[in-house]
Length: 110
Image (cartoon, rainbow, N blue to C red; front, side, top):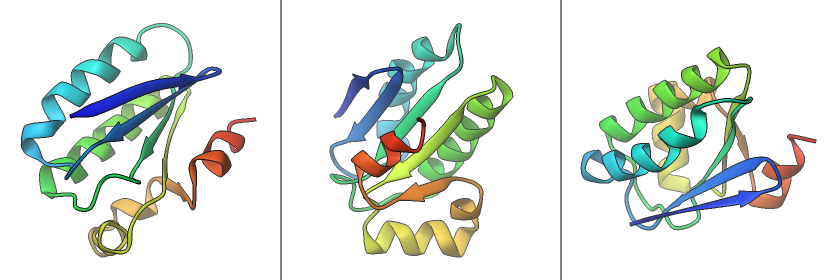
């Protein structure tokens, strides 16, 4: 399950559980409609995400590329230790800016 909230012009996605193959489809559908028109500004909040698999990592990279292509940006926040290690080891973390909490991530769009 996932939640999508809007904070000003920034969409915040929070996956409630691991970010893996079976959860990517519904999350992608929620966000996909928000990528049309305008400049996408999206934060993926990892506060309830204990783990991410290879499909989740691919999805993050694809979403980041799509946001950049449209002149926007994808940011991550509240990444736990295990997910942080996976992002660092795979190199995905080098392509997406990460912030310690949601407030800081939202503020980075100002």
